[in-house]
Image (cartoon, rainbow, N blue to C red; front, side):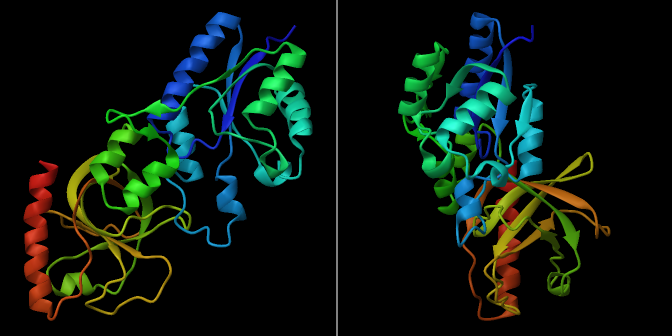
Length: 296
């Protein structure tokens, strides 16, 4: 007879410290109930898919989330939201959790819900699991060092406010983004600060401003400055999505077409419009010094 699985299901956006506490508890319960663990997750938060303004709304893209979960060495499987969006909570519980995934016990966060109109909430799970004598545990929110309840929405808000160190603490790692280097207008090169323009996933949350970052190219790491914004001084861009430009300190070479990963250390300043190119160059020189100090 196939061993039952202990299931946890969610979006797990960012795979932050709260999620990791839940996964640790999942492994503990598997030992207790002699079941195999299974993490079921949606690639994007359902509210992102359903929103009329879904841009820049996730901490982790599907490939990033897959890699983060892989590092935790837990069996994880992506769920197709469109396939299940019309399922009632009753159908999803019975046909997906119990039948398809052979669920024998369930672990969930306090705010998770499934099924059409989010009817499969904690109260629903308590009633159904009690009827069928299925072990259920609703894990409380994970509190950070300052006592605040860690959640994906709080981390998104913290990043949007530019508080990178606090967001990184809640994530348990530096916030990062990844993209391919694409050709730009080469304006930075003309003023002595060549930048790499990154093609970023439409849904990826992009904090606005100038940041001290670490940059990974292949297996090598470099120090850098990342500007995310609308370039108000030179050739302002008219777009909903800001431009992501990265200047790698003390680096020469062509990197067009290569993939780059950017790790955020701290915010240097907000994006500003300067009266002249000379004023912009002076500020960039200062940003370079600030970035070096913050990263070191």
